[in-house]
Amino acid sequence: MVKNKVIDGHLHIEAFKGEEGPFINCFEKYRDEAGIKSYNICAIPHLTHNADAISSAANNIQCAFYKLAYPNVFAHGCLEHFDTAIPETTKPGFDYVTQYNELMEIGLDGIKMLEGKPDYHKRIGKNLLHPELMRFYAEAEKNQTHIVFHVNDPIEFWDPALATPDRIKIGWYYGDGTFETHQGLYDQAEAILEAFPNIKITFAHFYFCGEKPEKLQKLFDKYPNVNVDITPGTEMYFSFEKNHDFYRDFFIKNSTRILVGTDGTHPWPARFPIWCMDRLYRFITTDDVMPTFDDKPLTGLKLPDEASENILFKNFERRVSEAPKPINKAALKAYIDKYLPTITAENTAAAIRELAKQLD
Ligand SMILES: [Zn+2]
Image (cartoon, rainbow, N blue to C red; front, side, top):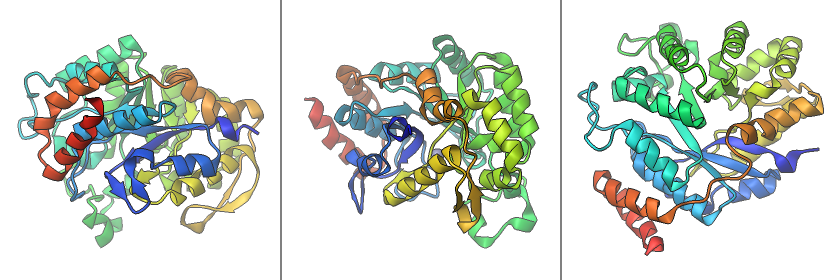
């Protein structure tokens, strides 16, 4: 029906090269095989458990070069956090409003925030209501810049009874008292909305509300510019399946508030987003019963065409734009000159210097 109009709103790049080749065309195979129109690469600050650390700035630069090579691709940039040991400060000349303006000038299409994910939130040591962040939200609200914002994680991640060694190892157990609480993160995010009620935020992963849709409905009703994506977050699909009829009505009622994404990530093979988009598309448009996450059955909602189109591409186009912004090479060059000295991993810096040659 509309598959060739679909826009995947949520993908990442976490390396310069993978087994399927360099990052620069890493999602084109996915686009071709899934038969979708476009996709949005979200830069993310890299976590300490990622040994091959790429800084936020390096990831932003990768996104910009990707858009330069593929002008029909969208990308969201992210903020760089310095001086994490001194939470009340930001590095002079690198305040968040300056960074935001730089990213917009380069031609990125929005901002991705991971600052509300518990482990990263702890690592940067900054409350989401930090005064410098508040100034950034004010600008983003004024300019109606789209923000994909990851706030929270499944509540189970705080539960000591469920803290498996694997989960502890990757840093996804938050119940040891050193992390902000589940409720605390919601409180911080909602204080942002209270202060900037027209800010254009799409909360990633259904805002982790699969078991509390009434909470999400309240936010939708109160803040007309808040949306969510249904990027898995597999747990939300178990909730959708358990409450199928309820959620079919919920999706129809709120079809202008929901976007799709797969979380496909380079350097992992393209077969994941290809498979995931097939499931998401059929979940929205058909009543197929499909083995999906953890091989558990998922029953399609078979939404009316109008609702399907909203969720699969129209909401993204309305909130971001119908066509990606072009890259401003001079602004990109200036950004590289300014941020290259901040990139401490030598192999990452070398890769950026190599890319920068394209601008000479
Ligand atoms: Zn993601």
